[in-house]
Amino acid sequence: MMSKKNKISDSFDQEQEQQYQQEAVERWGDKAAQSTQLWNSYSEAQKDAIKEEGNAIYQEIVDNMHKGADSPEVRALLLRWHEHLRHFYEPSIELLGGLGDMYNDDPEFNANFARLHPDLPGFLKEAIAIYVDELETKWLERELGILEE
Image (tube, rainbow, N blue to C red):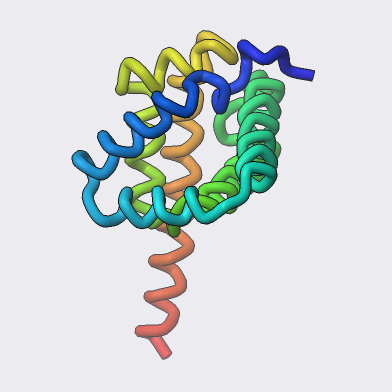
């Protein structure tokens, strides 16, 4: 079981959460506002369950880092992560790739993920890039298949 200090969702309190929501709206506009509205529609029990699910996914990624960013286990965990994001918004392929970059490149996100494992931010950037490339390839193959018919 993860200790309280090793959970991504425990990295900020309710006041900081409101500050982050406001910053997100300023940075990303309507999409962030919709996400905040969706998040605020959940009960506290639902929020806790969503946070725990996210924590479990990130911890399982840490536990499987030694298998490589392109391993089937990590790809399966990223599929769960992708589904988990739908608690907040519908993530486009482009947005997913941006998250991978942000998790590593943004100092605050990097610090939060590095609390779980010092190599996690860079690992997520690499693994998410691989995952996004696979999604783009599948999308392109599907589109080309439609065009060829």
